[in-house]
Image 1 (cartoon, rainbow, N blue to C red):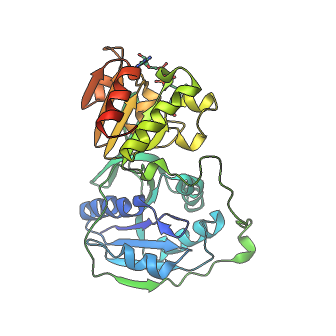
Image 2 (cartoon, rainbow, N blue to C red):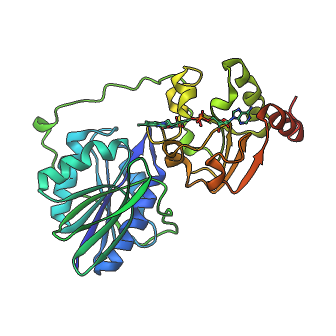
Length: 320
Ligand code: FAD
């Protein structure tokens, strides 16, 4: 029997979607090992978060109240202590900005093997098989790790979120953080350009690429965004040109998005872009080139000039 510990991710007072995906991934491993699934939340509004994490399949929820925001040293100490407390064979963390910050440190402190950015996992006969992508998502590889205990971080958007209300105990963990070992303090946040839009949370993304040609032409896409109630995102060249802020970039060096609808306009579908949006529920592409790779993954495709197609869409959606 091998227990599983997952540690939730939160930001600005809300649990992030990946927290509930962690519960599903953790349950999957716990089922394979016959162990219990322990969910933990560190800092922030831990009481409310604790209740929210009490979903079907969770055996126990542990809360660690220490400050409001993510802090590397606090998370490392808390995760290490919790792992010992619940006798965790597996520590499953998010491959998010926060998770990537402290997961390697946890593995290092515990002297455990670490597999990052995992998109699928199986456990059989004491061997962990973790699938991850390599070379800009060109290939998938399966990593076998024979010597547990294990630390893995899972890619957001790869597991469904756990649902339903569970009947786990939600309790404050008996964890003491040694403040003398906490070397940094979060003093505040400053928005980068783009306001507080998080394209990772959007349900309908209208994404624009180099096919737009000129910055002035973005007005056309803004009109479509307004007519449809969508959120605008882009490929990297648009951000590199300074036409949209960095937080709108989808892809390997941008954000991973999983909207219900992803409308790619004038985007070729380079692997680095596709790495960020291939898990969208429905992908629609508009491109003049019928051989553009984006059509290989699109559910619907329009071979056409965006300067003809987008005005027609705006009219259809009742825009000006
Ligand atoms: P292009 O590849 O130039 O494609 C433009 C498309 O528009 C073409 O298919 C063309 O047929 C079509 N088009 C032209 N005119 C029209 C028209 N009038 N109507 C309709 N269609 C038209 N890219 C990302 O997007 N995100 C990343 O995170 C990212 N990270 C990277 C990381 C690394 C390490 C590297 C090396 C590259 C990365 N890139 C990333 C860049 C990536 O390789 C591509 O260069 C980029 O995605 C191309 O953007 P695009 O599709 O907008 O432009």
